Length: 170
Image (cartoon, rainbow, N blue to C red; front, side):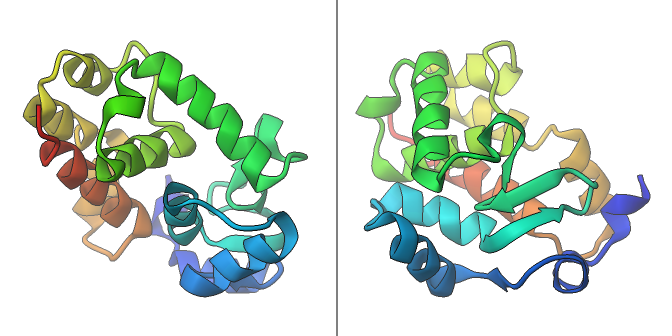
């Protein structure tokens, strides 16, 4: 559990190749893979981009735009498209949702926070967006980080996803 106490930016700067954030990250990925759509840019902005392999704050082998496991040897677009396919399977209304809701759903899916059995997914698929948003924050990692009271990109990201889901119009 001590990995949750790590200052993410300081850790990243000292444990792996240079990391790019925001527009710089988008430019780096687009240099290699071409232009990105708005949702892809959103994910890149949230994840950042690293030109190389590194261990994340939990010790998980990672590369590129937060790519782990089966996605390690894929391009960002390949990873994104694979995750999007899984997301559409889990959230049948995905393509009918507004762009901001799609951003939230892809963000959660990209992080690994979307599975068919999750309560927030069931609420979302039932059109219960307030309940889904509340349930997104009923998350062990989120609660532990909030309890510590330290700034965290994970807390910000989950709160933003919950806000976007809550604002989804039926």
